[in-house]
Image 1: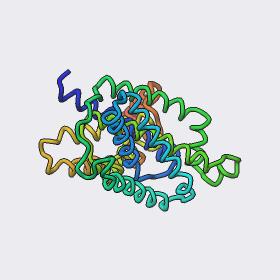
Image 2: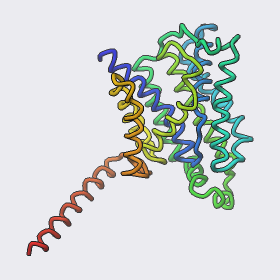
Image 3: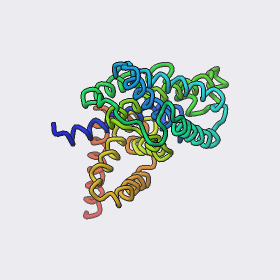
Image 4: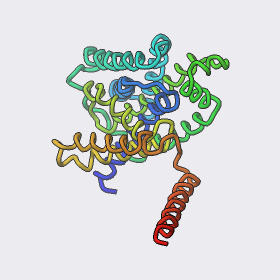
Length: 299
């Protein structure tokens, strides 16, 4: 496979892992966030420091990056997830920027705004795809477990779930922690892919991009999340030669889908064989009805 194509697929796999984490928190638990790029930054810098300064093998370094992001997400979630609705979204924006600014100003450890160069290019295509497949399977089982049903109950009606005996605060914090792990792993993989990281790579725009792909693909749909990430990543890369118009086209694609399908590409559906069969079956029925009505009008 050519280097450019392999690079795009590798970047796509990295983005998909982060999008799965945001999808769990936003799509399946119903809490909008604008700060998950901060957890990517934690994972990226943890992996970079462990591999360069301590000689740790990249796989344990990636996992440690995810675990540290998970721990910080859990500790942040305990006080902040008492906020509901837009209040948490605003708080998450501030927290994400706070993480980035701490990294930017902690020059003795992170080398500050100059960035962290010399990272070993350990994130190859097989490594990125292996992590994506493993973590997507784990997410599938989590979403379809009793924990997943509890997350969905918190999303559908937070108050009713509390009255039914669900410890909603616990499940919301747990969802944030797991999503932080996914974003941390994604950030660690991104560090190995780019071989250089800077705090500016994990700003609010990155957090907004993660939420955008989840909404674009469909809230509450794993396959929709992956499909949305693939489409928007490819749109960004295809139009890279006309960089001055790239983000304009990116925005137009987002707006177009939101107008035509407000629930996202997949909505809450999953891309299964039965769904595809039902989709094409319904189209066939519609065409038959239209043909019948046309015949009636002609007669």
